[in-house]
Image 1: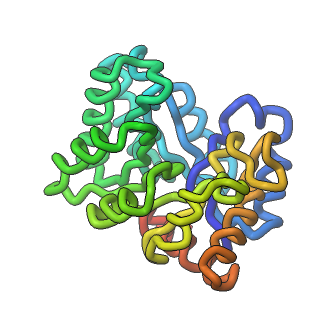
Image 2 (image 1 turned 45 degrees about the horizontal axis):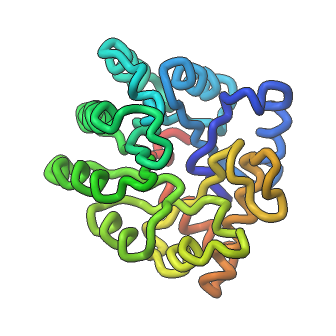
Length: 258
């Protein structure tokens, strides 16, 4: 059993063959897919997908790229959507100081507001952290007393940073980039992160693993990420599948929804 902890099945890249994409995932023993919203429309579409496909669950939120266009009523909508069945997390939220498509102060404010929603609903957060490690840690530390948990999506730091997030109660999610030839940093992280704190994801349609690099990614390709992690750690594919799936079930409370 495999679980894709982060994909974007609502995106246009899947308009023409979404049914087939999900069928390929199921045929490849991908039991659950967490599809992730990045704005209000995307979050609504993610919710709708959970009603169409039994294997799909959703995380809903507003991506930091979209912070500049977010309004107060958008947060109210996120709170309402999050109460629907099969909504298992808040996000994708966080900070992106690499692209800087929204002002940093607006990203920070929106990140904190979505954390407040997650806490109020007892949901984990799906965190985007790109070249914003210091500020992300600072914000999450300020919520430490609230028993907040979540995943650091497409982890991009080194092992020392991963260890800090883990000690704060977060899971480290390994994307398909771990299969790239020169991806030494994420490979080191995948090799050393405790098995009870590691997740795997596709971020489909982005970041397709080798041998599909440069093409559209899809949930069935999660097998390549799992196999690479197994190779790096010197353990079996089955062991990686077991632990990453167990971790995803624990984080997203999937055992109650199967």
